[in-house]
Image (cartoon, rainbow, N blue to C red; front, top):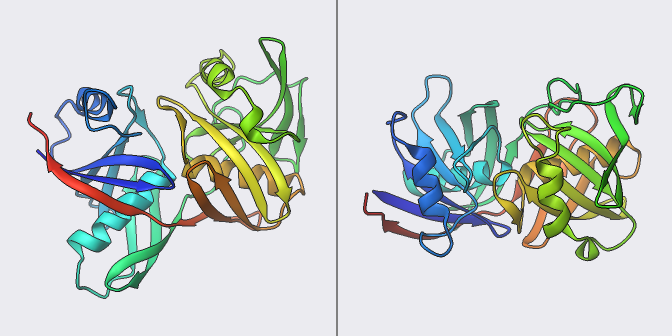
Length: 286
C-alpha cells in the first residue's frame, strides 16, 4: 500500500489514494498513525473519487474515529493533488468533496509546486444542536444573536468560559489573558473533549489575543490529543474572536508548529491559508 506523508505547521498526515471505502480504514489509521509502532501522524487522509467535485476526501483520527472536517488535512490533500496528480498543469482551483460539504481551494505555484494554499472551510455554525453542545439556555450569553459565549465549565477547579463554534466539526474556544504555553492542556484537554456537555466530543482551543491581527493558540484535538497545528481550530478561534469584537476580519493564528491565516468578514465561508509540505513516500505492508 503506497502512502505519502505530509505536514502543515507540524500537523502531519498519512495520505492514501483509494476507491475502496469498504476497507477497514479505521483500524489502519490506528496502526499507521501510531508514533512508536507505525508511521506516526495526526490522521489518515484518503484521496477518493467524487461525483460532486474534482476529488473527494475522508479523514480518520489516530484513535480510528472519522472526522467531519480537517483544515490542515484538506490543504495537505490539495498539496498532494497539485504537486503529484496535476504536476505540470496550469490548474490552480480545485473543489474537494468532504463529509462536511464541498470545499473550494486555490493555490499559487512557485517553481512548479503549490506554495501558499487557501481553502474554504465552509460557513461556521452556531446553533447548539448542530455543533452539537448540550447547553443550558439559562447559562452563557449570545453575541450578534449567534455565538454562544461565556458559557461556564469547571474542570478540576479550573473555571473556563467557553465559546462554541462548528466548522463542520465541534469546537470549544477558551480565551485567556495569560500565555497559552502556561495552560495545563495535557491535563484539562481530554476532560473537556469527553465532557457530557459535548455529545460527539469536542476540539478544545486555548487562545490568547496579542493584537487585532494575531492570536496565539494551542489545540487539544478530538481523537488525536494536542497537536502542533489545527486548521479548523484556527478558524473557530478566529470566528469567535471576530464576533466578540477583539480582532479584525484577517488574523494570523500562531500555533506551536507555525502560522496560519484566517479570513472571515462575519458572513459566508471562512478561508484558511498556509503552507503544506510533502515529507516522504513509502510502502505499508498490509
